[in-house]
Amino acid sequence: MSVGEKLEEYRLMRISENVCRAINDQINAEMWSSNLYLSMSMHFKNEGYNGFAKWLFAQSREELEHAYEMADYLNKRGGKVEIGAIAEVPVKFGTPLDVFEQVYEHECHVTQLIEGVVRVASEARDMASQDFFWKFIREQVEEEDTAAGIVNDIRLAGGVHLTLIDQALGTRQA
Image (tube, rainbow, N blue to C red):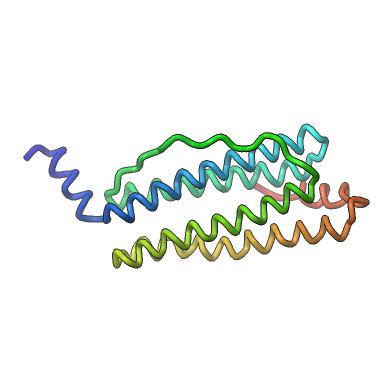
């Protein structure tokens, strides 16, 4: 048996195929999310909402960092990272309220996806992967709350004070 074959056998013993597939799927979902938020950011930049644009750009970077973290984790566990094609994201968006309602809905969707990875890891009795992904579940609680708060602020502003919300979101540090 060659060194490469031994390494592949070792990798397969450290993480199950199902967990590896679930993590790869989540990596691709995080990359898609990054592209979605980048597209939303550019929409706002074009509309002159620099604060909304900055907030969403930071969100885009955060999602990409998640993908990198997950890929690094998968490599450490002996899994094979497989970057698939990233589906096209929307490029046309509506009002700030429309966009941030989409952000909130998307964050809820991401929560479900990450919970799915934890379920797969649980079924495989892979405690290390469960533990690794629980931090993302905890983070999603904050992400959903933040997005819901922005939606609420925009609704309360009634379109009148959007520039104040835009300015406030522009203070986000990356």
